[in-house]
Image (cartoon, helix red, strand yellow):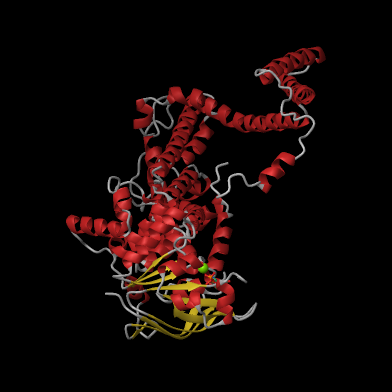
Length: 374
Length: 259
Ligand SMILES: Nc1ncnc2c1ncn2[C@@H]1O[C@H](COP(=O)(O)OP(=O)(O)O)[C@@H](O)[C@H]1O
Ligand SMILES: [Mg+2]
């Protein structure tokens, strides 16, 4: 305490109050502690007991794991409560539960990745990636998914071209212009409803739209797939961009207005750049979500054995639909194996594309994030 | 370039809510005018109506007249954007643009309006404005660093530099020091003293000592009663307001007996 009052010797009432505070009889800030490896030790202990118990009961591995898990929770909590006290014991219990749920959530994902990679990995030869299925459909060898990869990229690209401007401008209207107006509320409601559209219905919409446009009773068009996917993408884009724009503080808008900057320039030069990281991430994730969509594409783009770059004419092969149709071949008594390989290979490529999009979203997010410079 | 402001019978609304009623004031050119008064009596509201920032809030509107150098701000055909280019504003919380460097922040008023200028001209404006805001020496070696990386006081002076870079006629400041420490506050107050020779300054402050230190004229705002609109109780030269106020309410407020 460094004070510089005129009279240093003057009795300081605050200080006096401090010294008169009654000290507690025992100031206990120490408590027991489990050894550093306690969790690991308990895991081993629980696993051993679980295994032995399970074998005695003649139970299968699932029961053994569950048994060991229950023993682990009880043992660790009891041990900790006895040695460290109730608060720490509860902490360990909750901690263990959180980790357990995390593992449960990760298991299917890892198992899925593992299966697809081990089964699909060997299939991914340069040939498989650079060839299409022309003339190979009925053969027991060869062929590839080049056409399906390109089809997926094209159809998803069309969807993005349609959905991004519509979604971004809708979000800008909702946040910057609509405020609490009736129209904005209605749009928000409709967007929410759109989020719930089953994908097959969006495919039906696209197909009926193009029946009207082309007059063909069963149109097969790449652009139709783009429209169907865009329909699924728009609500996601609107929602995520809207959230990001709302995060931009009003202070910044006012700072810009106060400099005599018109509203539209404020939006373009201040609001959007401030939110761009989140916007780009949201859009990329929306693209990733629809890239694996199957049902609407099955209806409107159909299948085709080779690459079709013309979205306005004829069927286009896409990865999800390729996987779906190839599945029929896997039961073939003679060529079942090769079809199975093709399915796994295509599935792996689809996962890689979606993961790459996710990764790109993260990288872009980092690049554009506002710099704090500390 | 500084200009005087005349406010006549100004009523300010938020939707149907009358926030401030019947303000009449003459703000002299090249002087500092302070608005003091308890929280919620409408100081910020009046300030924001002086450069048409008030109407940025949905439903907000104004009745009455604000005349700057003979021109009515709320007249027909007046472009609020043009008004704001002439009458700059500094806010309570420092708000530099997070996506921009210090250099770009100072130039924001020009760049955002897509004014083309040469690099040398831009450099001159940046240096002049930062010097004007007493910030040049602290940041001259890191102009390309983000504006958000500065301390609170520096950020506020950066915002002042940004506001004077567009060379406005009038500078409005809404509690510019309330988020700052005493040292930064005194830096900003020194700055206000210097800016007075070129600009008409209106400053809202909670701090009566600050009003007494920096201003030439002081306006005291208060609520007529709880639940009633705010109004201007007294407007006089600062020395008079603080030594010999006309109204008993002013006397009570500055002597700390209420508010
Ligand atoms: N955005 C707003 N919407 C509605 N009422 C507001 C808004 N801002 C301020 N008010 C009201 O206007 C009155 C004056 O507020 P303000 O000008 O911020 O006071 P001061 O700056 O003197 O503290 C207060 O009653 C306040 O509740
Ligand atoms: Mg205020």
